[in-house]
Amino acid sequence: MSRVCQWMVVGALSTIALTALESLSSMSREISAQMLINGAGASFPNPLYSKWFSEYAKVDPSARFNYQSIGSGGGIRQIKAGIVDFGASDAALSDGELKQMPRELLHIPTVAGAVVITYNLPGVQRGLKLTPDVLVQIYLGQVTKWNDPKIASLNPNISLPDQQIIVVHRSDGSGTTNIFTTYLSRISKTWATQVGKGTSVNWPVGLGGKGNEGVAGQVKQIPGAIGYVELAYADQNKLPSAILKNQAGRFVEPTLEATSATVAGAITELLKDMRVPIVNSPGERAYPIAGLTYLLAYKEQDDQKKGAALAKFLWWAIHDGQKYAPGLLYAPLPPQLVKVVEAKIKQITFQGKPVLAAH
Image 1 (cartoon, rainbow, N blue to C red):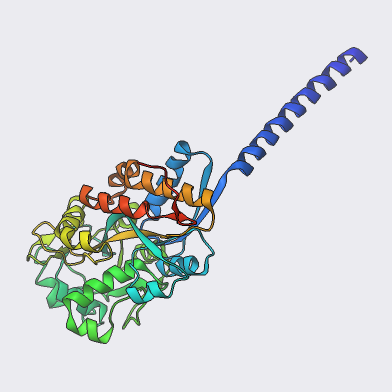
Image 2 (image 1 turned 120 degrees about the horizontal axis):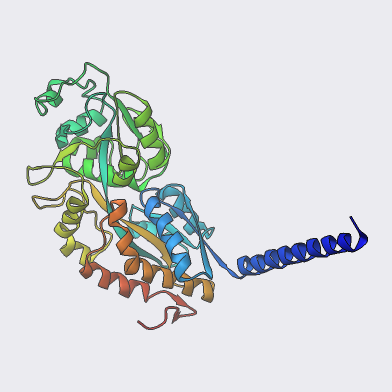
């Protein structure tokens, strides 16, 4: 190769290298210009939140969200300690818990979801019916075989195996657990007195799984297992969901429509206090185990720009973001509730002044 050709090659390579460096520098400036907003908490809404953060990046490229699905209990602890910019929980905090926070904390409902009873019974892919009392007895360890007469009488057309029931529950602090145990406490005095409700309880029997992901994984792997997970996790793992008897005496499948009916049945109480549990909601079409999930944010923000970015995202989530909920089997907020949530988001301030631009 002639010296001229060598110089031409070197020149071309230098140009490519320079262009690459300029591109990397540009990307670095863009990343550094992004505002990182950290959140942690509930695994219940994680499939939807992941979608939201991805879609919102197209709306506001200046804000980037980092969300850790560590369970509602972890989310509450981290927002209390000031480790994250927002927490997430399916368990609303009580008045007493709110008083323990460093300053006023707001509950921002985002969507509603169903907690389904999923199971692993070879040959039984759908149609399994359970009543509230039988479900309580399974989780108390009183009904231990799948062919127990109490289950068999509800399912005369299903061949149930003589197999041990392996109960699976959450091992971490969980809003999904709070919804489930609130339901069990509401339908059973025995459960309410012996076990109670909360993000963590002393389970009478069973194996633990971390997060909705962990419980779904345990049920999928263990023949004879039964567990409770958010509907999206059962769907993603191709796990069946039991048909439950509701307050009106009807057997209802956990569907998007049934979850919406649950919210509708509790709307009067929700408009008074958005923290009200909606389990065992009245209505013939209502699915009995469902709940709202919340983002938790301090009313008074430490950082004006970050507070404004968070408020702007929350406004998007309860409006444009709702269209992504049904595809992931979450029920959008009803219009009456959206109006109340709007007012709550407008309360977010920095140095006493609202951070959200007028809407």
